[in-house]
Length: 237
Ligand SMILES: [Zn+2]
View 1 (cartoon, rainbow, N blue to C red):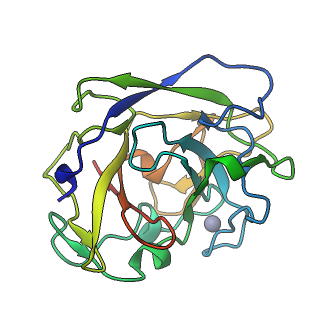
View 2 (cartoon, rainbow, N blue to C red):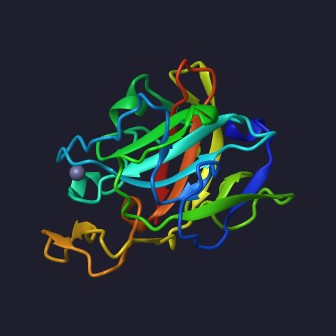
View 3 (cartoon, rainbow, N blue to C red):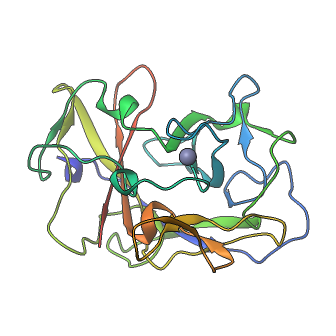
């Protein structure tokens, strides 16, 4: 169970908008991603477009994944009613064992990249869409604090849907939660997010912000002991 792994809790504080992006800032929303040199900007497997960079978080000291960074990408140029949120398991979610390969194969119009923080390089070949906002991970003693956070324990909107294991042998732990009211402000030059209109057709959003996974409450879990770090994401509304 994820609860077995005791770890700290950090709130994700936005520390004001700055005009330009500093190479040494390792946790931030928007701007250009900082990725290992050999890592391509992910393409959407549904429409082929370059995915939009949303945010990245360098896990702090005393975190299970200290020294690693998670970068989150998602497509904002296509919409598919079957892929508004990440594919869900067929089984009951609470205490589930996630089948081998699932965590690679479910990443179609989104991508969760995990890499060594020290290998990140600002990707000047990416044209940013989301407004750059540095993040500060503020350590807190209260694991059930409400808000965008890393670690602690999930605040479920509905039932507890924490998985138990990946491919039977790998234990999982709660990685982070993003609130359903999280809006990613976009640059004037950024195209509107394509969303599903009321009549079920793709439409350009009138909003000057993007949302991630249909604006649902987002929960991510990490897998321990696999060769490459893997992330399971599910949402609630
Ligand atoms: Zn797409």
